[in-house]
Image 1 (cartoon, protein in one colour):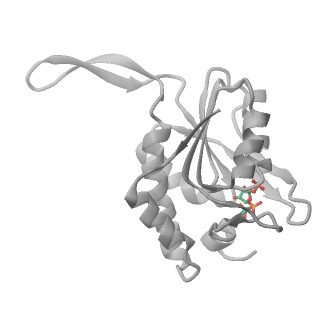
Image 2 (image 1 turned 45 degrees about the vertical axis):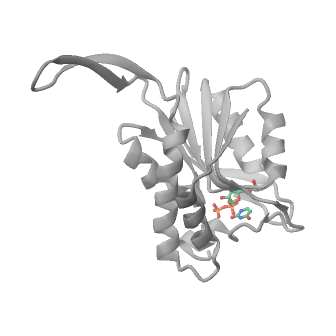
Image 3 (image 1 turned 60 degrees about the vertical axis):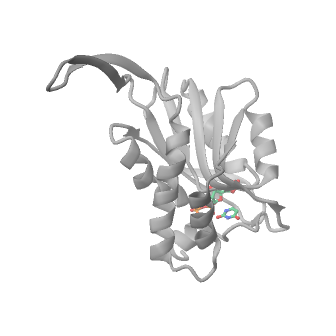
Length: 210
Ligand code: PRP
Ligand code: URA
């Protein structure tokens, strides 16, 4: 697994505001979107393209177009939904599929409660969106799901991760083409499975308590 941790003052600044407990939901949502667009720039570095020939007003030249099949973007509901707009802003032709997952806050085990993805992901490049990589249970289950459907490579974009989750993902994805793009790698998980220093419950901060 390749891991890329962003190293840019604008990203650190936006994450600092996101972490602040007094930041209201509307600002939190706007910043999440902006951060994803910045991280998506790195995450799409190896997006597949093919050469095309075009006419400029002056001459004929070559450039690139995104290859078929189009990339598939998969936000993990609920919190990953807050990252979708920021991603499709950068890759507007991407297809979007959905996975709904929730972690049991006692056992920290994820369950999948919704799935809307193409049956066949053969030869697809997939981009998974989830702001928080804590124990790694949710993201590794999501990545297994995509490879089981035939995906060839998966890039996950997370705003924050705990080292424990990155390690778990490394083990669970061994031998597979997986890239992890992070806004920041935090210190640790606490006894409740929350990322420290973290930003709290991303879903609640985006959408409120349910
Ligand atoms: C959060 C987060 C991840 C998961 C991370 O979702 O968005 O999906 O927890 O934890 P893990 O790495 O230990 O699996 P949550 O289950 O709270 O659901 P939500 O998005 O509906 O709030
Ligand atoms: N899910 C969250 O939303 N936040 C954490 O810190 C861990 C899991």
